[in-house]
Image (cartoon, rainbow, N blue to C red; front, top):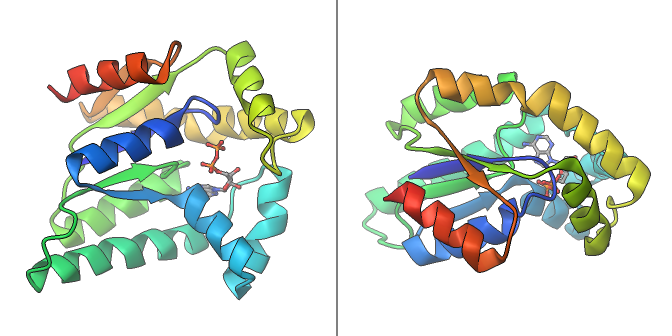
Length: 189
Ligand code: ADP
């Protein structure tokens, strides 16, 4: 099992998807799941859309409900002998201390500890370039700057949180997709 984090634009999504596929893990991206809710026009999606467009964090309760239901579903499937995915890879979650603590409680309930937290490091200029090149609805310069501020204020403190727990590993997120994937593979040993 594995869990990862990093600033917006560090290439989390790309790496997470490939890695999860390669290792047969459930890839759980809160950003992707929220965008799917927005696209489907659900009540949850309507609540999240404006918040995401501003580059703010969607409420902890909402995000936690999504993560909880997916992890519980996977645990139930496995109990019934469904050998689909074993383990999970969380992408873009947790993003603040409250989410990290709630995750800890949920995983204790499920008896599934975090094995590793991967931090992908990239300098701000490169982050900005990548995000602007991507062209997603919330990828304009002003919103990106705000997302980076939110990251610094709320998410970056989790680096110390997981370092203290001996779970953190950092990866240089500069270079080609293949080069970064190779660095992550080395960490996984
Ligand atoms: P990026 O890593 O580029 O910021 P994501 O797809 O991870 O992209 O997130 C896009 C948006 O979705 C965030 O700016 C935020 O509004 C919302 N979001 C995603 N994950 C979370 C989370 N764990 N908690 C709160 N909001 C989230």
